[in-house]
Image (spheres, rainbow, N blue to C red):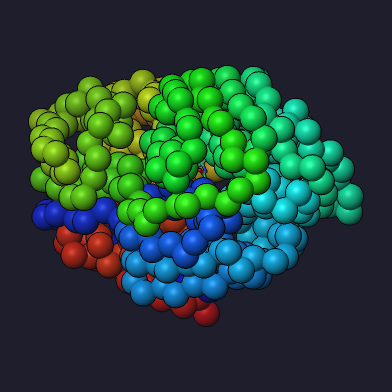
Length: 422
Ligand code: UD1
């Protein structure tokens, strides 16, 4: 197992190219199950979660050729419909094959994802929606057994809660269903929008893309004539590097980004006193004279993303005063708190609210444990400003979603070494 050694207090500067969005690539790879042709996909991030989904698609019968950030995939050869526990347990987002497999084959089995470090994360809304589309669903021996022998039927789905992968699963299922599906209270994340656009470009009528009501006219199980595409930039990776600039009070530029996807995040940097310069595809963060405390409530897009909460908590430890972060989406997403406290941060948690008393210049390097993907990056950020060495263990979490993190940070001036645990 690898760990990262971060030697703190190095000055960062320069620019970094942002990779394609993992959370856009995952549903788009699942959507290739709906395609009647081979596809070329560009700007694929080189992260473990993508390789996991490719491995799952290969187990189902797809073939692919990956060269750096370019992928050629043929999912037309898929002839199996079981997503096994062995693979689903390593990545919850494997649930994204449920909608497209069921829509194409009329049956499938997908291992039920368990809880995870950040909370229970049920998939009840995905299942209820598919049942409303005519599927029968049984949970047997830990597997979701879904059947719709005559194909899925269009339906009106009202989600009780906004769910990103739930919306994506139903968009994909609806694309091959018989008739019109309307999703009410749909997610509006840029990753959901790209999925809808790719399906629209394949000839499916979709109305309301980017709004909370999406209507899809299905193809009656006819596979889609999908076009080649390029994955949108990773807004969370971009936000994380901007946090690296902010926490070290550097001038740092992120390139290959879509600035409007980061509006809520950029507003918080500005509230904290940092300068922000934007052009069409890049954002530069400028140092603050004094880092001000901030209040953050995580919520669905276009609000402040839960996937940036841990990184802003690390940043809030540098503020002059008390910041408050309210985590509204996941009940257990404060696992990084105890690790930041071990580094000298003053943070108290009460239910879903964390109070962070800024202690600028007081973080000390030590051994810490990564607990989930974004928590891991918060520890790297804290390590960048801590006195001494921070050893971050269990960084397989980080490798799931950050493309060449230590290489990119090293190129910006950080001192980070990857080594093997003994
Ligand atoms: C996606 C993102 C993840 C991000 C999250 C919220 C991917 C691959 N992952 O996760 O990075 O943190 O959105 O922006 O895109 N819920 C239910 N029942 C369900 C589904 C969800 O109760 O059937 C609840 C969840 O427990 C959570 C909330 O709804 O409290 C939102 O979760 P959801 O949007 O579904 O998150 P994911 O799609 O899993």
